[in-house]
Image 1 (tube, helix red, strand yellow):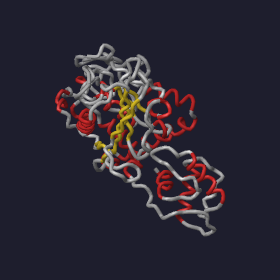
Image 2 (cartoon, one colour):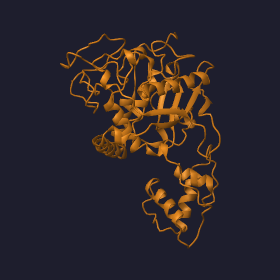
Image 3 (cartoon, one colour):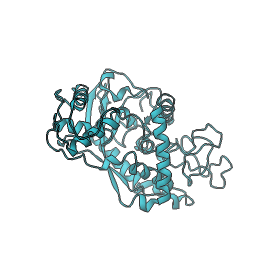
Image 4 (cartoon, rainbow, N blue to C red):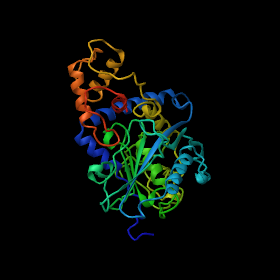
Length: 382
């Protein structure tokens, strides 16, 4: 075991959430809307909200300073396998769930696959590798930017971005809840807590750190509700018992807190803080919340890009494709004065040119001509 390897689980998702709530009014508004949507979806029931298994495309960004940090393809693929087992309830340790909680252990109808195509449709492995001069990263999102020593994300509306790197301060990982900025959306994992082979280090060597953080990315809270030991916090899942605070290590069942006897804490849930070999379940309520997220803020993961209509440029003729383009530029890229009238006029051209100027680097490499060719169309709708 590396001498600086963490021995207790530490996740910074709650800190990231608080920071965004305090600094980004748009995030606070979207978070409220997402919870309203979750209530609506929950009322529909799981069978209606998640009638079939959905596969999330994943891209793993390995950001490394040393050879050991540049983890192998085999280690990455082992993590995808763990995610699929945990989210589909096919994990070998599912039998360890206490009998009283077994009826709550859910198949989430969610699975994962390394991306086989990039956003332009070219063949891809779903793995990127970036050499860095940074000794370690924190939860300030620097690892998500090439300008700060990390790797830029693939379009976050279309892929689950996972960054694997050296994290400092005993941190195992963190995620961004749905509703946050696209440029920082995704999950970050310590390289020695990723997958179940290679450099994965006990007690976080079974891939459960990523299961935990992807749970956050799909809108799950910590099971104790992040209220210290107040017994009043909530993870907004009715089938998870109220518990005082996080559990560490390998607790013995039952572990009672907040007068939740005789069964006590559901410490074996993936959203607690126990060791990898002590967590082995999501509940039906958690599965419902995650699928509500896939039906709302993360639904574009499963939807194709709008079909490219052919090159678009200045014209006095109204075209439906131009109107679609204008609506996207107006609403998503915050150009409220742009009139979606279907006419490719001077204002549309200027906005497109400005969009192109900001996307000169890889992977976009857009021309700056104020016209919409295939690459610009894909970049706008990605």
